[in-house]
Length: 161
Image (cartoon, rainbow, N blue to C red; front, top):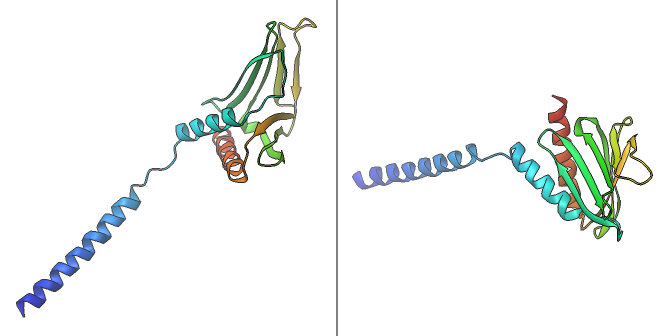
């Protein structure tokens, strides 16, 4: 009789330990924080951005900043720079035209909220505004696009606060 009672107690203790371990494991699951979203978004954008072939383009920088600005700077061989920038709280829609291999990511705002500036241009420096920023991209699978949209919308809501 003692063995049965002791055996049942051990079984019950084992079940409680398993349940407790599972509860602890899932209750302390780390959530994705702002920095992880930011790092992933920047990695996705830099790996996917596919500037149009232009022999004069020397370098480009595409960055999502921690203050929720998306910035693209193109630098050409003779020093000309074209700079695009907007705060994600002004983001209205993220569209995509293309397939998994190549396409255009279209970021649009409700009004002319995208700053477009040129520097060191022989035709003169120009400041203007736009409602759409077209980013040529490559290797943009549906899952990657959906994840990028989620990240941009996450930062849009954070910027609205």
